[in-house]
Image (cartoon, rainbow, N blue to C red; front, side, top):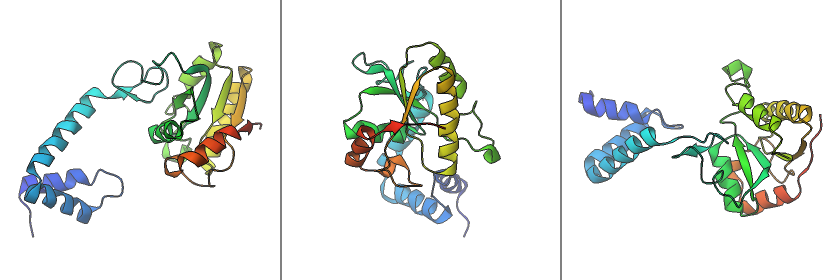
Length: 200
């Protein structure tokens, strides 16, 4: 069956989301068109506002609406302690644990040369400049335990050692090969408390 062009366009638009194939996209489109016109308009408005209004924090690369994100602009946070994470979802996981009071640096991924993701794509040149400024005393590595996560951790370790900065790694309460966004707050809090020096 052929859809009307606008329906087809809506279905195709949903397939850009992770884990959404053509059938799921079709169900979403039909649901909005059948019963959710007002919700669909709200969704469209929210998407438009976010695409135009959300940028990257100039300091940590997390999502922000201003030059600095809420964490970086909070004077009560310890700016000498920086946690390196792969995604904004990881920041949210740490914040929900209630344990961490430092700042973050969000890589927006992990090193993966086969996918064309190198140090520049992760903003590691920006991190290197921050390390040279001398404000940071300790980096906490909270990248994943995958091959890419470990490679990224070792790259950051080299940068930190050149700048004479202490590096620790969160303790292994976090499952091997797992993503931080799926780890509960209590486990993350324990992993933070049990962090250990990280060495090559």
